[in-house]
Image (cartoon, rainbow, N blue to C red):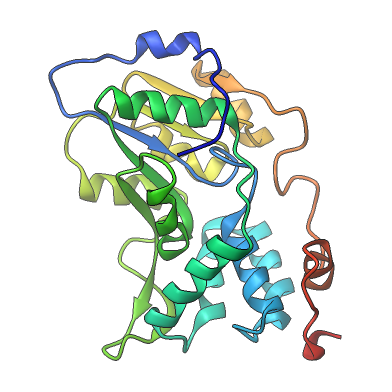
Length: 257
């Protein structure tokens, strides 16, 4: 569970209908429930600790992401080509246990916990690799992680490609609808990547710390908005992999010097 102090819930909670029907609430992950970008942060940690040797691909990843964010989410999977799924799971657990500290955004976390207590299934829908978020199931009352699935070959080795529906941009909505055919009462996100998913919600749509493009859409649609006191993640530009490693006090591998 989160360590957020109790706060007053938003007034829009009164518009979320509690009916005798299946109940589902959708939350994006990075930038919506916390400030961190887990896909980037975990990958940087794996580069700095020598678990992967693909740091030279970082500028390409950032260029692709800036031009086509869903394609960028897919490209990140290529950093892990050749790793076994078992090793990936072990490394991700080490990352959560030893390094990662989630910078929770308190209000969305409280909304999530309140909805879970009211009998809503909580799905976290993310463009990050699904496996990167599995440890969250032990920290918050989340029922399912719906993310970017790694393609895995018959020997349990990651192919570097995605498997199934690409869970980014319109794919977020497509993947949710492939897994759920009931009503969706609530959705929260922070970027245009979340727009299609957010439009699935019947009762309340919430733009949390929205990127400028999503904020424009939210204003046009009359969605709820929680502004951020600082620039949303990624809007201030990107830095080199070397600077990312220095910022986290991680060693820079020799091949990146």
